[in-house]
Image (cartoon, rainbow, N blue to C red; front, side, top):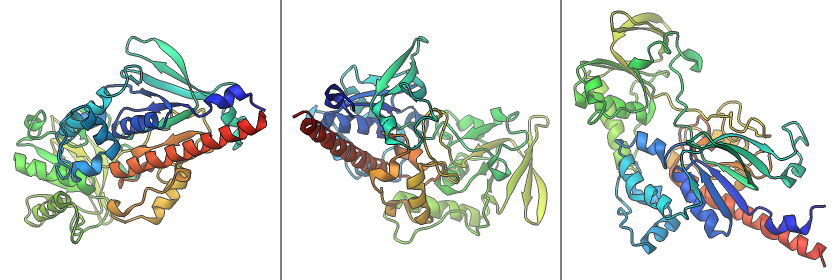
Length: 413
């Protein structure tokens, strides 16, 4: 049996990996719940948001922030965006996320500190398979700061909020990189370029191929046309007459506008659509990129200058390699959650429920994946869903801690 000293601090120390929108909100919620918290961010606060900072969000500020976070900043005298305001990523970061980070005690947030590996004290990955006894020992996290100093940090609970933005999917058929993709990296852009700002000169007057359906692809295509690309091509894996789904009475007007506009550009012939297609190979010939494209009935070459990849992202699963984690074999999301999400396949992200803390658990006790990473490769995640995940997990931890203390007090009478 564990000693009363163990129970006195059980579940109290939470390590949060990633200082993005979900990691920051989780930190303030955990502190409000009486937990000791540390956040470890390998770069700067909300680095991923900074990278897509030029993109305007579909959803309003009120949907992308929490009442807890807003109240915290209002008490400090901060001026916040209006609830219905549509922000760019940069505005969201500057006007909300950085303010949240500044509101944290100085010993909570560790920027430029990478978590290299996670294990359990005195326990190996193969020990006590699927047994709760693994939770009797603390997590050990190996960290490295900007000066190269490494140290081990202990924690009772880990919330992995690292997201997926740094892990873009490849271009090739079957989800693997296309032959020549690596060699052409300097001509391939993963994500959504800043056409108005730093990336405008790169794409203006050029022949550009956008790969990937969804709103990222639509944003890239419309941006290219507005910029004045010489040719704009759009490649989709599925066979759709129109690339963007238009949702009747869409509650997000900006999303509706984008879908309608991208479809109209295709209908008007200003964007060339390649349907039910895949990239077989990419070559580099005298500064141009001959791309070999295959469809069910044909194979042909397209000569372009640049490629924009909007094929989505995938989670980095190496971090928890020494833990007993379980991910979906199809999406690489948290396994119980993935099964529920598959049942919601095709549903509008606004209608997808957050589910409960049990859906975010792994066989490894007290290790949770929150935010975009919990969805794995599934694209229909909302920040609002991540906020709900935080509340369910912290409620579960608080109840568990409370029941542990009650059992302990009875056993020490």
